[in-house]
Amino acid sequence: MLQLLLLLLVDVVTLATSAKDSVQVTSYRKSRKIRNGPGWCALDLANKTVSSSSLHQCSGDCADDAACAAFNLKNSDTTCDLYDYQPKVFAPVSTCENY
Picture 1 (cartoon, rainbow, N blue to C red):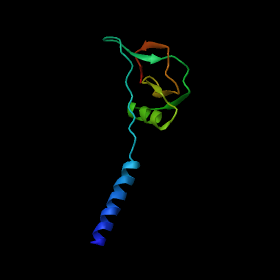
Picture 2: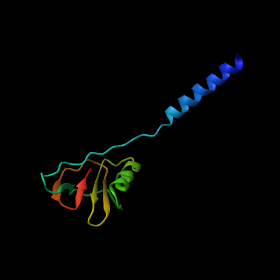
Picture 3: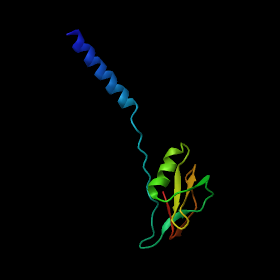
Picture 4: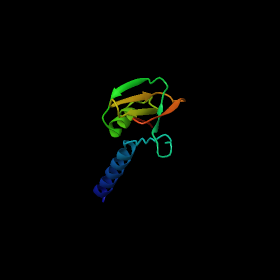
């Protein structure tokens, strides 16, 4: 009986530890798009620009940067602009999307 209680206690501690160490999921929302037109691109000065070939990679770079609040994905030159703040100035650009 004592062995059963010890096994049960170990399972509860393991469950509590794995719940505490769970992965945090970060999501980003695309800025508004002009009807049947280009997406919005932030024109504010980015804090950092990194090479990125996909939305997945760019959003991952932003998620890995604790200060990142938004990003531009530029398809024309496969770069990603990271912002430590919410940009305020936007323009319609066919090769850029802001998230």
